[in-house]
Length: 499
Image (cartoon, rainbow, N blue to C red; front, side, top):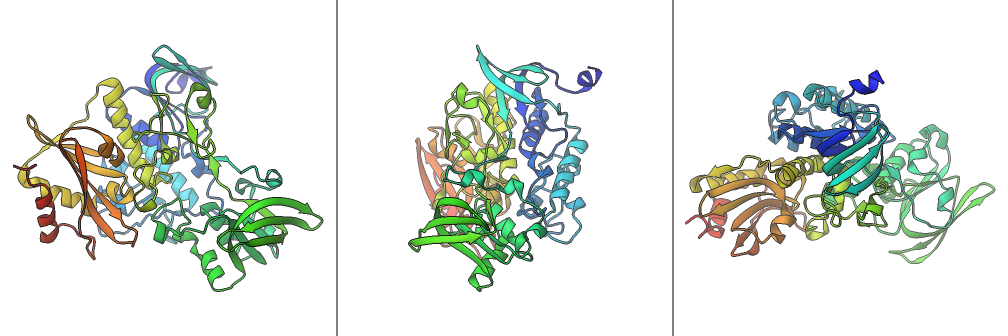
């Protein structure tokens, strides 16, 4: 009992409770703390880092961190080159993953990522009640009650940062007998075998990449064509880190990337038989294999939240969310971390957000903390007043170098409102979908977008009289949008607002 008493955040009543100690939960808790918002942070795990204590299986991330970059490490601009560190407000709390990297790759090892997250917790002295498992949820008046293994927590707002770490597979006949990605063995166990991997996103390509030195043949199957992130600009697709299996397929090296819908999977005397139907190239496929692995993704462990009324989609794998990552059906229930991919955004040119990865959802988490503080507790984060002579250059600088806008393209935006009484007010980084849908005062939202040809543009959304108009500015070879051409374009769009 003494050990329980020594841990922070004992059961009780708090304004906010954060569930989870992965990077999403830690970023929310840190940002709430910096705003002075009292809250409890609890986790079923014994240590921080969430799924990075276990995955990726072959130990190398798909998101880069560049220890040496054109800007100083620890600055805001450096976040553009460091996709894996959490966001600290002091330089000593920033860019904590690079010091643990051994220099063999710009993609950190899983252990390096885990150590970087743990260092963030240590450096910021972020208190978390570990070994406290969330078990159920109910509503009592204006409070949510979270029953845990340590007792009950009451709060006005609850943030669930429980990850996308629960294995998921479709109900295809025979799929329930197939090992999932999480059950993968040492790659040497697949020596000289023919392997069918069901799924063509990161987990499928990761295993294919790891198996290549050992397997006799590898086949990756899913109904839709593989999307490579160099084109798709999203961690929802297979990233460049795993391009080798795709190159092997193109060059005829023994790996096949096949577009096919799985109809059923059977056990045979020698292994497995997969029955499929071609999609982009119609036809029956019957594939014999020594091993079959379901690389079919994960689902959020939402517990009893659906019983509370939290709506879900994507076959129940994700909660439906507002632009501020709040349940669309149960106000006061929020989400952080990889689950925030459930807040779709505008999805310009068909490209989803980067909210499935740290370099995207860390910004979501910081914005969420500000939103909760303002909405539920009346804590107004500071807003800066901007002079009209400074505004154009400020917005061009943001679209040229703000990591939030580049890492969450067409999803987050720098928002500035024009207030007759207060003047020009910087509202900070906000969800673009909220700006577009909000019937608010005259304002401008600046973001960055990659169009369907792969060209990167600055883009501004101007709201006047309650109506929003979108304006795509010209691109630039070196992605520098601060020159006279862009200045003239932006000044022309803002005529009237600056008068």
